[in-house]
Image 1 (spheres, rainbow, N blue to C red):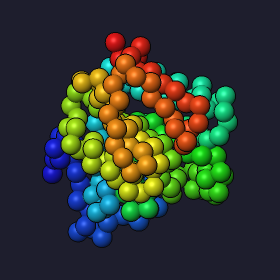
Image 2 (cartoon, rainbow, N blue to C red):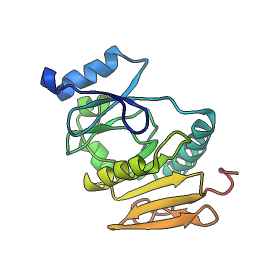
Image 3 (cartoon, rainbow, N blue to C red):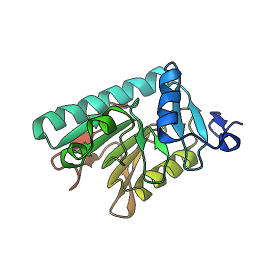
Image 4 (cartoon, rainbow, N blue to C red):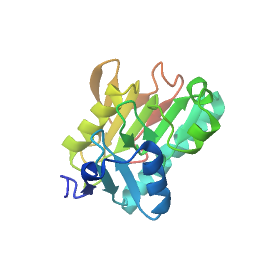
Length: 195
């Protein structure tokens, strides 16, 4: 079956679904592909990004990593990191950040596999092939599972939807994004990246 983004969805219910360990092993056995799992145990085969999206993601992740090295308050993750959320979904944002106190509570095995937590911060960048409604649903899922700050960056209309404190704000690329109380001191202007 295909979803609205054209991604392949594998329904595993007739197989009884995968346990967390089985899904992790399935991903290891198929390293050349990228997967997510939704809360209904469907496996989603994710597509690769194009050059522009990869560039944007790298530039933003570099800014996050520089800020994080200066502040040393958490751990940054790239788009190949999957997190097991409280609703049992396994999702991969374009970038994520977890407060160091929460990260340090995980066992070494939990850190090695899909960390069983929702990041404190996530960002998603809309690519040309993405449906905005699907990305908004994914952002809602992040927030519902405990994400405290989320950015949905839309290069097409040069705005970012900021999910914070139960509200959604629209910030233009001409304005500066803030890490607010979640990532204090983080400020990011997207105008120079999305030219």
